[in-house]
Image (cartoon, rainbow, N blue to C red; front, side, top):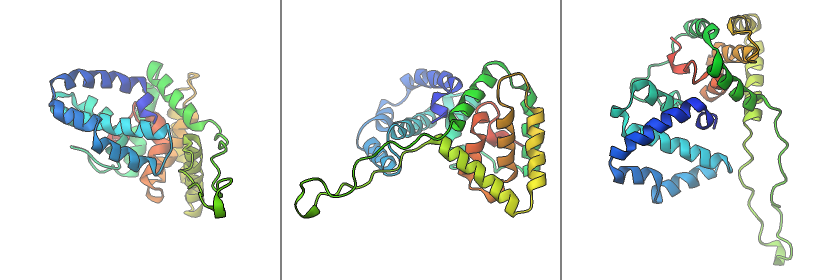
Length: 245
């Protein structure tokens, strides 16, 4: 969801759009319309509601189109398009994550250089992920439909609302709990403090989020990969997780 809204990604998608003019039109159509797209959208909608369905579908389509013209793209541009899937579904040339200490060191080394539009983009994504979870809107009734004979016509409950900030908060809570249970609290805090010290203290507002990202990396062996990537998400375009080596 965040990747689709990043200014840096929008620029790469413009490049992709130009390259598609010379691509096999039948293949382009297969990724953007027709029965296959309807199937994918239906599958996604079973797990999340709108507008997440549309964003997830668009993200998958952009990646598929990027693969279609990958040989014509700059490698860095292709990697930025593929990034939402890079660690969960490794693409061409992606290597297993480096040891944790190397990842932390690489992250800390890159933090001081973040500034300007790059830092602003990080702060924007971080704000989206850290806003207080929104109260769930009342959904449709799931009991008997009024006036239905014999209580028939029960409406099935749809997928729960998807709130990125709630997911982010839950992932961070899991990190803290895992560190406490494993007796790693002091080392975990040291990694977090190191990142906060290395991040630019220029008013961009990314200091605390650098600590969160470092904490997620440090505890990655006790978390799901999705939790690690979510905690790292604000920095994923500026310092790609898969490049931390």
